[in-house]
Amino acid sequence: MSTVAPLEGEKTLLVLDDDAAFRTRLARALEIRGFEVTAVASVAEANDIANKAPPAYAVLDLRLE
Image (cartoon, rainbow, N blue to C red; front, side, top):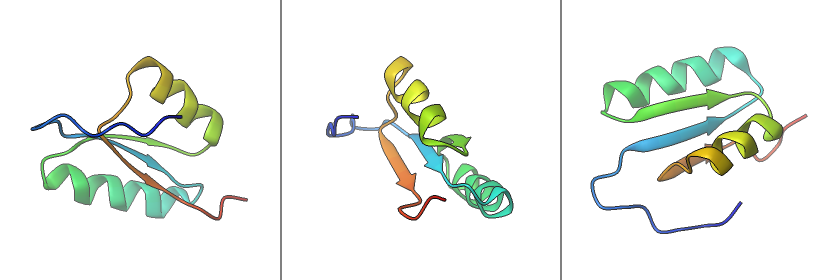
């Protein structure tokens, strides 16, 4: 996954967290703030999303099981 500066005005965001309840709450909170959120539970899912349509932003759980 590469790091690319987000496009101005781009509001796509990827949430990667293995805790389903937290992931859902966080995604909803960010959607309310105007982001287009894609929420996934695994690195494989995140890589698939990032390769197809890289998000402008990402929130990643750094301690995945």
